[in-house]
Image (cartoon, rainbow, N blue to C red; front, side):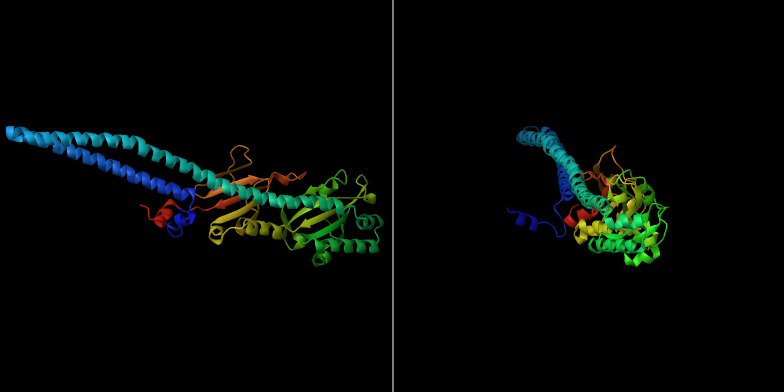
Length: 369
């Protein structure tokens, strides 16, 4: 029989999954066990009838001898039925029990493996994207327009630097802004005209990204800040990649300022958790997709209420990937980034939390007892 014909016989709304297979196996096992119990009960009743028949045949004397032969044969058949029931219990019921245990393993392994692979795919997708940001910031920091604006401190040079940054910002839509500061942290110019006025002359000395970028030993180094809200950009969620801008654009030149590129995390992170999983609507309704940073802080989630909260991920030892069921019966699959090229991925995790249909609901759909 073809696969199409087989699936057409399934109850409406029931998917072929290890979980539904487990319930069918369990239901068969229950029915077979009940049959075995009923059969044993019938055998006992037959034996009792045979014994009563023998007693009555003995009382009848010669007249009951023929009936005694029949009663003995009934008793022999009852014993055969009992022996068959014992073998059935030992062989068939035991195998069904083993099958049930195997489907239990399949439920955990297959459901978990599928969602774990999805979590790995999502985290690698964003990490590969962010690897390119590490190249961008180090490359753009060597642009003559930037280091000349910092070295000459002329208004015309700063204006030209703003134009150069504006071109980059226009074509690289993943960036919210690019900010150039002098060595003291004062904003010299920025790329996005929406925020330029508010940023002009502003001190970034208190920003973590500026402090870390100022400590870079050469132009080959860069830093990545934590995902956070940027007060200078309307409290949008950003991820800043930064490095030092050096004299003459040389990697070993004296530090003359810093360049911070503001990756638009609010938009890009949302796109990953809401679109890239590509879940069917019915599945998406009971699934939450999350990205966690190395401290297990939720930095993006298809459930916005969970943003910037701590997620209590239960890892087995230092396992980089895996799955488990929480107390509510939801399956949680996770995968830590593998990094990409020389970018370590910051220890981020992709996490999928999926509510599973209860066994009772599945039984109702399949018409099981």
